[in-house]
Length: 201
Image 1 (cartoon, rainbow, N blue to C red):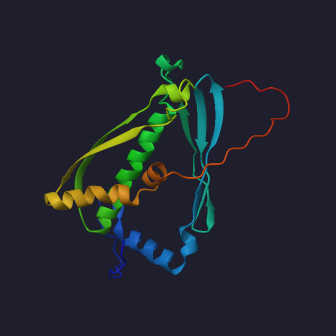
Image 2: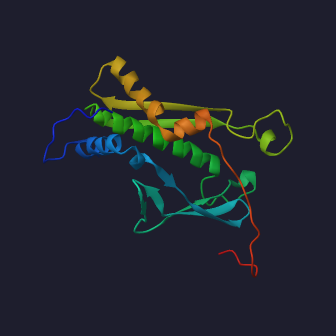
Image 3: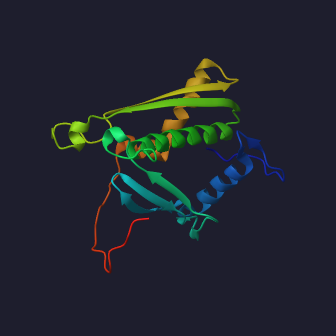
């Protein structure tokens, strides 16, 4: 996203994105790259069976700590076919949501930066998993998704060639797409809880 843009006292909005502020943000980060560093986090608590609950509130970004007015609370469970109670989407469905939302937002933001108005955008996403990996039945079968397929339908006043270029913006710039498709180091550690046994809410 380039920043060759006139300074204006009015905000330009494209696709619901404040493009004026977007370019101002680009300028700030170019001048101070440390402002681009963000750290997102969540706290998770196991409830019962496949049911667990995450609370998302604080994050670090632009050299400061930020707290939302109200935390987001997100539950995850497993369908009854997988011995859960089906009280919420399961973790791999959340992964599909995460990659879809991130690719969509990346597409919208970068289209706005290019001055392209998107009137409507829908998508369908599927992922295939073989449970023999998760269940430890066959070590040659990977635990995670074997493939993910994303299909977008877009209404925009652009040529067919521009439409394909527009779709490519999402995967090109999406942090979640990058994390999933290229992999990311993940460290896991544990410590013992102290005190009396708690009762799950």
